[in-house]
Amino acid sequence: LKKTFADLHIHTSFSDGTFGPQQVIAQADKLGLSSLAITDHECIDGIAPAILAALEHQIEIIPAVELTTEINNIEVHLLGYFIDYKKGWFTKKLKMLCQAREERMQRMVEKLRAAGIDINPEEVLALSGEGSVGRLHIAQILFKKGYVKSVPEAFQKFIGNHSPYYVGRLKLTPVEAIGMIKRIGGLTVLAHPYSLNNDALILDLIREGLEGLEVYYPEHSAAVTAKYLDMTHRYNLLVTGGSDCHGLGKGKMLMGNIKIPYELVDKLKERHNSKVT
Ligand code: AMP
Ligand code: ZN
Ligand code: FE
Ligand code: FE
Image (tube, rainbow, N blue to C red):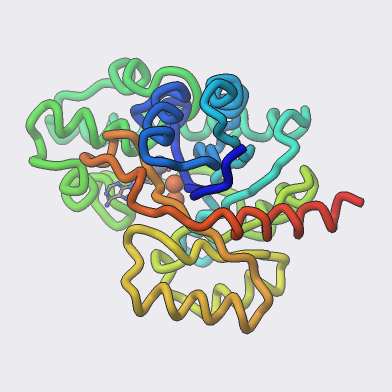
């Protein structure tokens, strides 16, 4: 395995990305990445196919997941790395969370329909395919049908967290998610910390067992990156980074935007191995 660069935050078509595992890996290969973490929302079904597809490209796949949690009305996305993703209790729990996603999607579509928007649950499910369904699927349909000029606009106008057609769903608390990831031997890292913009909450999460910060992220300015990097030094946290690529799902392809040095993956492995003993 060449140890070049890593992208530790990638979605596949098993959640709300538009690339299947094979396309993800072909793209990563072109961009000179040698290590990828597949981080689908509440879903691990893309990991095995990605491992298979990566074999012939000399690319390493780190099994991972992104769990959506909520505390005090704040959404906190937690990444679990090096998870023992086949554990039965864990996959059962994910199934339940995916079921809640589907029901929530139906309620959101009903609200949109009540407002005269032409969208139905079947077409959302058809677009999402296998795995977990989410708002990005709804956003893509609103865009395709001309209700909005871009995917981000769908969130501003219709389905963003504080928008009229937003519907919440069953979510874990951060403490529950950290506990789950720990139980399957994973490392918990806070995804896109800027989206919380709440340092006090981050300190709470560290006390609850958070082990790292996604310091390098497309939406992080140089100042924001420096701030979180500093926080990792102060609290002895792991440093990660990823593009949060959703294929073309967010309107543009983000893979390649963030390439972190492989040494950061080695650090994750060291921390992980020190626990497995
Ligand atoms: P869900 O998990 O169904 O609530 O959907 C959340 C997902 O929607 C996030 O992981 C992003 O992929 C996407 N998303 C959230 N806000 C935006 C936005 N403003 N523009 C584009 N995508 C977004
Ligand atoms: Zn997503
Ligand atoms: Fe996220
Ligand atoms: Fe993500």
